[in-house]
Amino acid sequence: MRFSTWFWLIDLILLGLILWLNSLAWQYFWYWRFDQYGFDKLMHFLAGLFIGLTVTGIWVWWCHKKQRPLKRRELLAWIGLAILAVGGGWEVMERGYKNHEFLYWIKPFALMSQGWLDSTTDFISDLLGGLAGAWSFKLWNKTEN
Image (cartoon, rainbow, N blue to C red; front, side, top):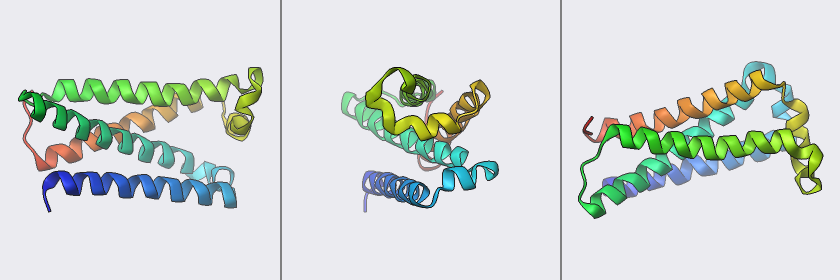
């Protein structure tokens, strides 16, 4: 199989793993039972890894289509923006569930949240996952600075 096929296959398997773990976590209360062991941070890391891999795949495809060189700084900037958008949106929803009835489903996460320290460590986990996604791509390809 070609590199791009493997890359997207791994990305889809990771998405499936995240969805499977999340469904088990909701069913068996793992977010609460294993919070002290960092289960929430693991899920944030995996989500960041998924975002990092997805953004990397789209970025590589775009650069190849436009015949542009692959620049690491651009990739990291796009990954950072995507993680800030998705992770930031999630944290805003955790904070704003009290003001909007349509966010009632997020209440258990918001009650588990422990303030700004929790949000900061969630972002750090997301970013580390995103960087791991970019780094895994670097293992396969050479990129320019």
